[in-house]
Length: 345
Image 1 (cartoon, rainbow, N blue to C red):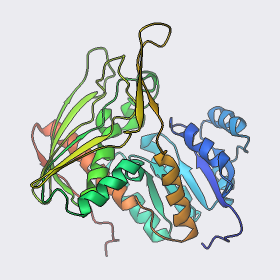
Image 2: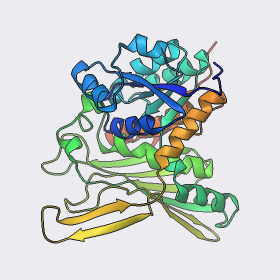
Image 3: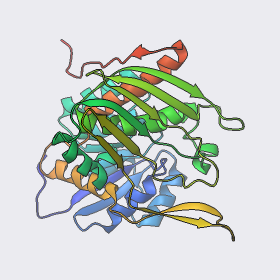
Image 4: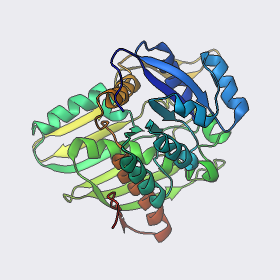
């Protein structure tokens, strides 16, 4: 599909279940190069409320897709598939929330379906679009730290209302807990920065007292395909008064240097000991990576080129996440299975 450069890209929203819907709907509403066509949801009340908020029509799924060049999927994790397949069948490019799917067969099928349909499947993974990550990639590729010897990542948070009262800690809708929510971000960042794949995972999982039934604590010990050890703490275990937003860090240790990046480094920490908002909070003042991510998706539609973070990336990162659960069940390390994307036969 070739987009006339004289008109905005027509974008719709498929489902409003995810907490990120609000931010991206706001971004779509503000852009002159986008026509925010409307949204749909299988929860009609929720969808109509969002449509009223942004001044766009609420439509049936098929009607919306018939009017779109691209669509953003903000459904629950376990229902990504039905929305992505519907968009692919309509020839509409897709930007999908992570994880791509909560089982490996589904993740592969979605990647294959989109490639077969000739549409772009992009993943909503903002970390490679952050300015600190982009600088770190330039430094790494210049060979400043020599050969990689160790990778250490964190993507921690405290339990939030959406974990305790929403669906993101409900296995039926989320497919898991902290592992499903946080693993893909830092694994994706390591893959993008280094070009290495995770070949094995040893996961230690736990659930905090009085927390949700899903795992809230996870530490993953992994190995990259060049033999480099890689550890990740992606737990929901920060204290109540912690500035939970914006913890996405990675340290790459080489034989000639050490590279540390904080993807949300442009942050002030505000501490209050009186009033209603006591504790520590984060005030982010840097460039918003979600804007650059949306720019990339729109460019991939206009130029008919692969997005920076594609469905293939979504498949490989989901594979690591799912291997972590397999490891926890087995009580030891497991190899990561990467199914082929090319159609068999």
